[in-house]
Amino acid sequence: MQNRTYGDLFKLIQSLAGVGSFAASEQDDIANFINRRFFEAYQTSQMWPRYIVIGEERDIATSPAQTIPYAEAGKNTIAEFIRIHRKQPFLNNSELEYDFYVDADGAHILNIVTSEEDKGYVTYKKQFSPFTVSSSYSTDTTDVPAEFFHYIAHAAYADFLRMDGQTDKALIEEGTAGNYLALELEKVDLRMNNSTINKRFSTYVNRQSR
Image 1 (cartoon, rainbow, N blue to C red):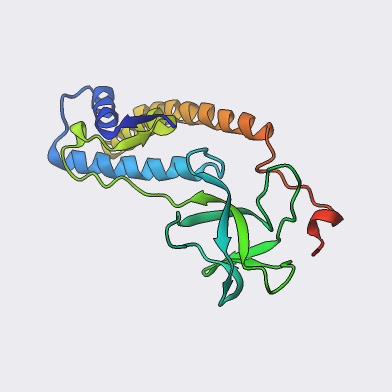
Image 2: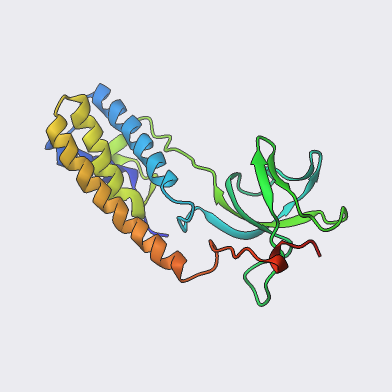
């Protein structure tokens, strides 16, 4: 995955604003706008390649019964369960896919085969982590996902313009930001349309407990 730096992102927003630097209070506002728009971009798709994990082995808890928790030691925290299989999926043979529902405890498996099964293979979206930059914004080297870079820059600048009362200019920047994000989403859609990761065919065979 390609990355840019937080400093580059902040300096691009300064360039869009036509200023050499923002006032201290404005810098904090921009940092908040950046995190808001970062989360917004993250939320637009289940299938961002940098956030998706395919068929990772997870423990099935006994309390609550037949549940895969969001967190497991040494592994990413799960933000969103996408698919759960009985065995390692997407190899040579199709595998039984579990039905499940999600609540505060995790994913509750419905069509588990036997009580002896203690593992599930989860395809999921990783938990979002906001930027934690709090000073030296324009020189910070924290990684910024390259696929979100231009969207965040123009969208955060639109928020800044809106805060400054420049609504018309903000709408233009919002449109530019939306175009950048749409292009990245189109890439994701094309990639996923050519794969089976996000496709589930509902048939008697893959829903029966066996």
